[in-house]
Length: 153
Image 1 (cartoon, one colour):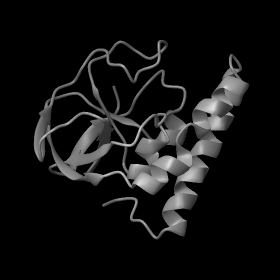
Image 2 (image 1 turned 90 degrees about the horizontal axis):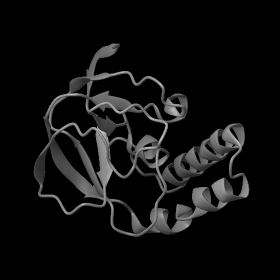
Image 3 (image 1 turned 90 degrees about the vertical axis):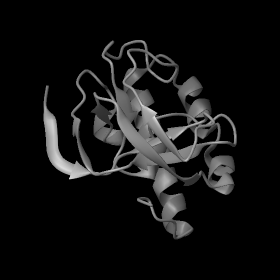
Image 4 (image 1 turned 180 degrees about the vertical axis):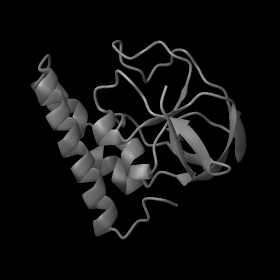
């Protein structure tokens, strides 16, 4: 297990209705994980909001952004095909998160379904799926630049 020794804040996006401050516990499985991902207890996080967004599909308009209460170390994932795109990290112990804000509704409308539609077009082609995710990530970062949004609130 490789631990990133650089302490930093990490972000987690959820559609759950959590309080301003919440303590998260590593889970072995949850609805956002792919079938091929390791069955390892963890909290999935990324070093910025756009990178979090590039790790999953947006299906509706109510997502909350949380960040770790303190700068922390995290574990480098293994057997995760898109980690080079999302920079996803894993937290393996209970940790406090604080509410940052709600995801911009215009961003959600702009990118909702985009990745989903492309993935279904290329269904079953692993290489194409990663290419689609890279396009999706690029679209998210361009939106942040165009609207002068801070990717690390």
